[in-house]
Image 1 (spheres, rainbow, N blue to C red):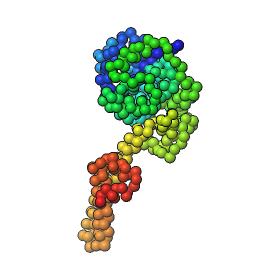
Image 2 (cartoon, rainbow, N blue to C red):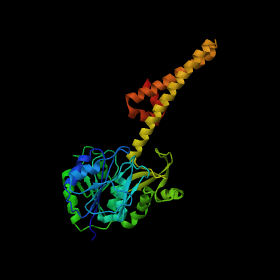
Image 3 (cartoon, rainbow, N blue to C red):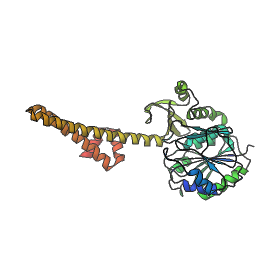
Image 4 (spheres, rainbow, N blue to C red):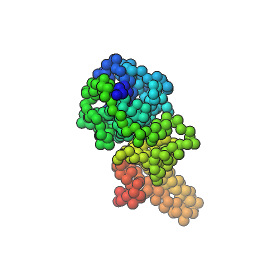
Length: 351
């Protein structure tokens, strides 16, 4: 039986204290390597390696590309980089965002699944939305052990709840229990083989897309092999999205490489829609201001018919701008609903 010696952990909002508690309970001579993705700002320097080194007995670092994997070490994805693992080394890549994040959890989990299978353990911690759910599904299918922080104690329960509802999770435990459980699983040599044949092809293709190992000329064919073309467009690059289904879990990916779960796609579309509404508001206010200026100029030249036409254009622009502003300021979520359903919803809001 293979020995479990690869531990991958993903977390987002509310996970920092949990990570500290986990590493504090791991022995310095752990016969495994630990890999962590935490959603962090892409533009700020991360002090997470120093924090976790102080919390526990194992050194924690931001690895460099192609760095060898060593037992008893903690590797943390650097800001604005995905971290993937291959046999005996680490890949650090500036690949397309997944689930609106870079680093993202799913690329790490998929790489652990395809390269280590039953030797791996996957852990999902506190966070919003659902990054990690699809990666945990792949790990489970490839024979890995899966662990999720108990949503009842998580600061943000969305990520743990999504992982649980879409996977047959092996362990749902409190933060204080995760470290000792990982130590126990590393010592246990009873790892089981997973569904290697049915998952391996599409999974490896996704890992290659995330690591940008596929020639750009072949990317469309690569995504076509693992998904079904849809009418939806990528909110990041406006390219076409392909739909992929793992069990009941739907995901989307464009041929550039951006990938989305349903929740992350909805959230990103919502962000883009709101930005578009603010842009429309700006354009309407500028149109109204320009029309009033032209109306004033027309009146000064005694061109009253033209002045009235521009004045009416200004009134219409002001009314439309007022409707959009009222919706945006009253309830951003309703603004998105109105935008998706068309102008009648917006008109009803202003009445």
